[in-house]
Image (cartoon, rainbow, N blue to C red; front, side, top):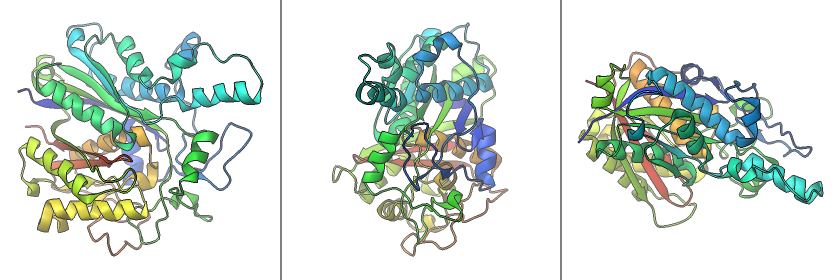
Length: 410
């Protein structure tokens, strides 16, 4: 079987443009969360979000913009960075052995909402002609493959918050078993529309805004956490077979060593520690590592009262006594919960933590919940940490769970 290595990273979120920039902001506990400002005339009062408020880079010709919903644009921006860092020459060999595996939870929410406004509020009798092309969930994957000339497998995964973890994990399996040599994997989400945010708000799972410091509204593992903060983002990793990367003299950033997936099969929204534990156990087994080899976990840690406790319990179930020595942090405190893009951006941050030996903190964690009794790296980053392998966890509505393990390449 092939070993699977990482040769490129890309990211865009409320923290900024670029994977390195995102990591630096996460290390410094600089939050991208603020009051939500919608383009629609109606607003969701008092709502905070991890919204990208800076102009997006112009990577697409003006004549092609109608093909792109915002979530596809965020995906192409992240993919472009990962491709550039990887050094892959898009006009060369292995195009038929190259693919795209992409995740999204809600797809083209912006395009859909614009169409509904045109029909139901503005009284128009038609909507934008390319609305279907722009809004379909597989649009980012198709656009990336088209622009890269990748003629191999192109898959889209839509499993709520684990969407991009499944995309990365299934790409790992695809390469490992010889079905491809190169896959651009990741996810993107842009659901900050009036309708979508109102729908999420109706579930009573969103965090209360901190009136004095809105940037500190997302408080994973904190005793006074009140819920999740929605965000938008795109993130990508270039995965390659080791033989492909070595043949072209690529710089190898790390090795994707393990992937585990499971389903709770117990409840649509209430997480189950046993199901989460199965995903982590599977990832460790496929990586061929011992539990003590894992030095850091980038937690799902969305800041919900039930979810954070369940994750702390699942980590203790899996790691036993070693759980007390693990460093665990949730970067959602600064970039919010980006749903279909969450796993991808958190995996990108995990790879950077491994490479730099620097652990991003759980920002604003002043007082941990007594039921969340692990080392959650509160407030400040830690540097010069001797970690050789790290895990990234993702759990979702519907009961889906996924864990990815990255280790140093040697």
